[in-house]
Length: 405
Image (cartoon, rainbow, N blue to C red; front, side):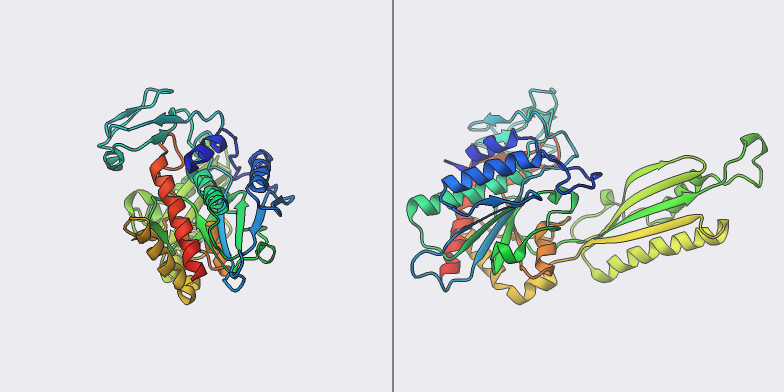
């Protein structure tokens, strides 16, 4: 079975995680795909395939004869999809021998233009898989799952030699909780790669330092007809706070290694208002500075309006994995060689986000990321090609071979 055929089986399973849930996993529907994967893994000869009560799936292929000394390699992907667009009732559309022109999404009539998405022209002649425009596709990260298990199938059917291979599929990666309950010791790998997003050939070992901020504003509500010198509108203070942050350090003005403040949610009335942010930067010093600026802004407003009017709660989410990867840089060298062997040019770029691998790296499992071949994740314009998925499988097989040597 080709990887894209597996992907088509997976995307119709609704697995969207919920950032507002306090359960683990955040949605029970993620178990539906996890159970499917356990059964499929057993059919592929992964005899110890299993799922725990938190929806983590694990399995192992023991080393082949003469390969017991090879370091154990892990391959990891996640089962959940993002809530930026609906992940339910997904209707993938297969466009064989794609002509490289604008695409009309059948479910909505919206058009994916080559002008808006220039990469489309480079996909001419390939088997392009899109949504119908009513949902996301779910290739992030079901493509990674499909590619990992297709590589396992190739190993088994072709009798390819390998060291111990550890397979892991996590829930809740899209809400930043994918590594929360990952059993590194039970997983059994010395090193690992996440196979999660980006074009095939991309190798990622830098990611944002990340934090969240919840800023609460306390006002005084009185009748507006008698409000002079008495009312304090929490919403107005919230707007002052937001406008005091650097305007051009928002996501829409940044790229590459440039960090940002991103206002994700705002609620409130005269008495109480709340702003929620995510803070990102690749540079540790700049990251810390961003948090300090938020605290300083709050302090200035409290000095103006009174102690306790503005409260800031900062919470670190994950850190840049590069410092944990540097001592194990052979992982990047292997990935480069594997990509070249698959006939591609390696592309090394910082992740403008995070992966399970970032946290796992800090918890003792060095874990850079490999691209899957997809584009436009988290929305109705998401797409991927069958050929790029095939290439991703080749990259994985090449890495496994390099580990044996």
